[in-house]
Structures are given as C-alpha cells and as structure tokens.
Image (cartoon, rainbow, N blue to C red; front, side, top):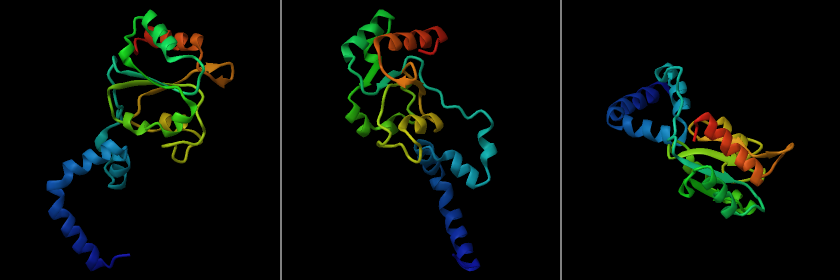
Length: 175
C-alpha cells in the first residue's frame, strides 16, 4: 500500500499523462470489454447512460458453432434456400475445434450478427468463470446475439432446427 505522499505523487504523474493517453485507454477498455468496469471503478458509470447496447450489422456474419454430423454444405444450402448468401456464414462444426475457437474476435466486432450454438465442450478457450462458453458469451457485453439450436432438451444442430432458427431470425427482421 502506498503512503499519502506516494499516492499524491502517483496522482500528479497520472494527471500529467492522462490527457494524452485517455483516448487510447478508453479504446483498449472498450475493445477488451472492460469499459463498464473502468467507469464503475472511477465512479463514472453514469456517463454511458442507461442505454449501453452494442449494435451489430444486420447483414453481418452468422456463426454456427458446435459438433454435428450435418455437413456444412447442407447448412449452406438451407441458408441459400432462405435467401441468405453463403458468404454470411462462418462454421466451426468440429467438436474439438470448438475448444480452440477464438470467440474473442467477435467481441465488439459489428460484422458478426448472431452465433448459433450446437453442442460444445464445457471447457474451452474463453469460457472464463462460466460453466460453458455459451453462458460466458451470453452474459458479456459486446458479443453478437446468442441462439441455441435445440433438439428436445439437448443442444444439437439438425437440418430442421437450423432452418427453423434462421426462419425465426428472418421473420424478426434480425438477419
């Protein structure tokens, strides 16, 4: 712990540097998802206002993640039948690859619109303290909308639930 004198010197040093570094600091905090925490720590949470919602592009990427035996080509074909360009899709359909998938690239990246999840490992890159990567992404700010592809009570990517979910998102006008 710093003494009063050391704390005062640190405050002076910070105040000297802060005007030239504030934009960089805020940008880094925003990209890393720590902006709310930083402002809260500084007692400035009210500066963001009550509506701090990150928006993505309506024509952004549709990311499909989870182990499945349904081939990528089939899923692309279903999307095409619904009028969705194949270039809008990004797939990670191999169960083991999901563990290594970099979900952080989607945080505060408006080009990603929605993540459709099938079965995923409970342990994996980026799950933090949450029980699963799905729970972690759903609770954090700055990520695209999360949708679960369900078959009964289990996560599963099927042709039917994939088509139904895309239809739902189209009817909502979300994609």
